[in-house]
Image 1: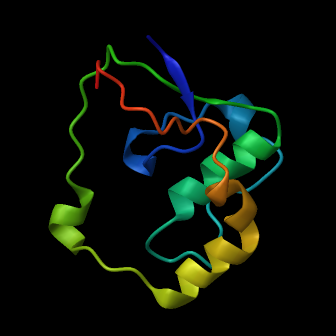
Image 2 (image 1 turned 135 degrees about the horizontal axis):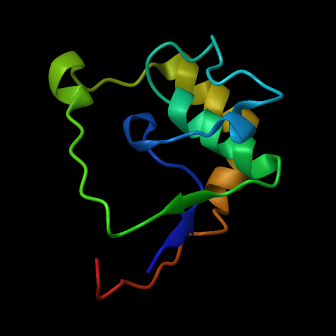
Length: 100
């Protein structure tokens, strides 16, 4: 079943021209991490949705090449911009999904 998610990884995101109009795709203050999440949350804020289908089979190996690290400045920026939404994700269900 296709579902709405608050955000998806940028390597898996297929932003259409309509969703990209009226704003930048990437915020320059987010150099490495979170620019994809920030973009998705801005779409959500504009009334658009991030639809995820279980019928796609995708492979994304980005962190394998650049490593995994979180910049504290970027973490603070995301918390200040999206803290309330991140704490109350409208699409998060705390109950386990037997199909995932």
